[in-house]
Image (cartoon, rainbow, N blue to C red):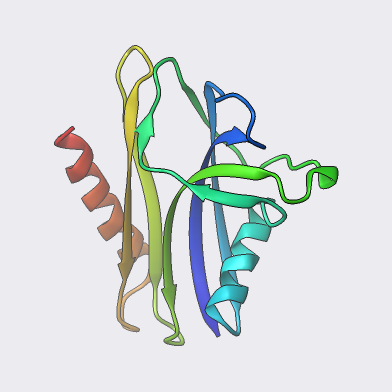
Length: 145
């Protein structure tokens, strides 16, 4: 069984004008192939019916970031474009611990950056260890910004 974790950051919807709000959504998926695990993670985030457009990690001026459990996708908008920043990790090793996380920093004016890091650990380590390693790298990256 393959596992894939995806953290998505949504910045604009359906090709409309750029929004000044970004939703932070996390999803975890498992499947028999890498693609089915990825699709399961997208489904967990409620973005499975969207065409994802991957962006770099720039946060625009006057942007508000909020964490959310899911993206509110209108079922009638099947195939709409959705801009995302994604951190993902996959493993085909049963019992392996994996983590993919995104961190961000913003200046007072709302402009900033996202950083994405991933980790895969041995069977002896835990998901907590993998997440801690990823968070250490995120903090190190952000301290350099």
